[in-house]
Image 1 (cartoon, helix red, strand yellow):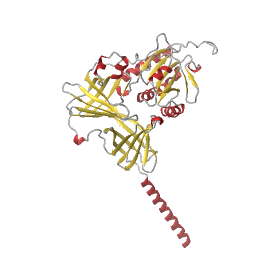
Image 2 (cartoon, rainbow, N blue to C red):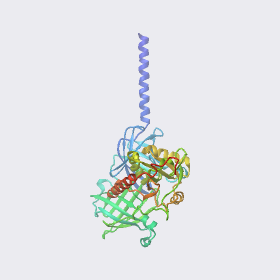
Image 3 (cartoon, rainbow, N blue to C red):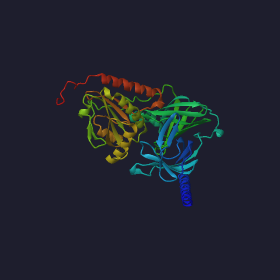
Image 4 (cartoon, rainbow, N blue to C red):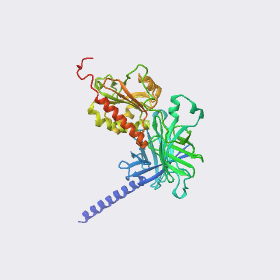
Length: 442
């Protein structure tokens, strides 16, 4: 009996030691507290604030959500060491890597993981728990003296002579439209160009000054400026990757952008485009393949580095799954940040899985508009990524849309979706010219 009691005593002691060791290990494996956080990137000595939320108590089970107005982008959390964590930016080749100083403070950097420039664009940041404000603490805010609600005609002001420049390329790039919503001091909105949008911006108005920022995976962006007594807006836009650009603007309910259906077109006398690119398995894919014969084909020209491209894929991937039975096929042609097939397999393999893409994805080459123009025979000029081509059952290009405007643009997005569906319905309704032709026929 005594020996048995001793054995049980030793077992209990061993269990107690294991529990204590597990407790020590748990204490060593630091993790940020759940809830809302406020972070600040430092770019050239200037702060770019962002907000996020953490749910879950450890890596693997936790969710990291970036907050921009009504927009939420969700990410997983991975553990590097007891006090260091990583948040991969989903389909973008970047990550937030940080150390947990304690449950309420973290410190790290946004890491650019593109091999050829690895480390060149890393942005340091700090973050604190429990702070939902973005630019100014509530107790330090002052009343807004201006009202930015509405639609604004904007133009980059680096060189005012550009306003008289007839170059379509320059004007399409520099003419912009701002859609802003202001409620007291709170400001949100989006800035659109002819080839895309800024995604949802969030910020504040203080006196006659305004501040907006955005961070959802690609490089963070800061927009700030003033509105003078005459109602004219002066501002600047910049980020951790792109150069700062000045702009000016006026409120204008009739402000318009260039028609995105007319920016890219076929060369004179052309009715088709042609290409042959490798898919993720290295198999050559061409529009002349039997798979596309007699089908309506959507060609999406993208890059995983491009925010508007990922937003466009977020729309197209589920649309295709719902409509492919109607005689539709699609091909995504990716132009990436490395001119490497292995890099393409890495980035687009993740991209395909993330969006559950069920159409072909092929590698076009390096992310360069001139390269894309040369490789996509028949196009006059690739004005932007993304660009979407709608091809009829005869293999002829019927529509080319440059850029993409997401849901935050409201009526612009609704108009795009309506026309996209209308044109596809018309093309699908047309007869298949090869329906009664032998498979070995012309």
